[in-house]
Amino acid sequence: MTATLNRQPNIPQVDGFYESLIHAQRGMSDDQADLFLAKLVLILANQVGDRTVLDQAVQLARSNTLAV
Image 1 (cartoon, rainbow, N blue to C red):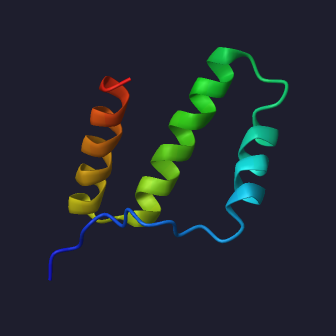
Image 2 (cartoon, rainbow, N blue to C red):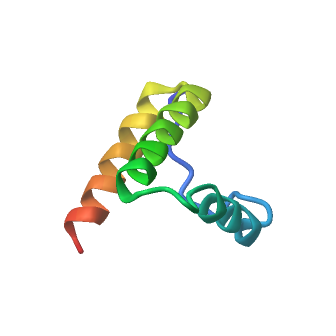
Image 3 (cartoon, rainbow, N blue to C red):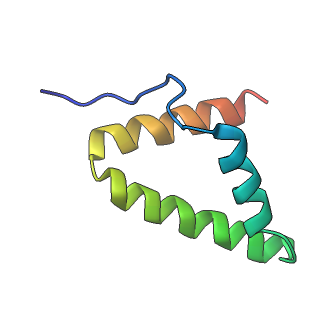
């Protein structure tokens, strides 16, 4: 069975998570915040662990970023 990226909302208490994410970056320079986010992406990618899903997520993030 091939895994696919879940594109439906799937984070309980999403506002609380967003608040925690913003709070974790308080007091950081822009460079530190960028490094923090890069590290967080790698930690979460390791947790997901499925290369197909990760490739789909990278493609989606890239296309959404280029569309702006």
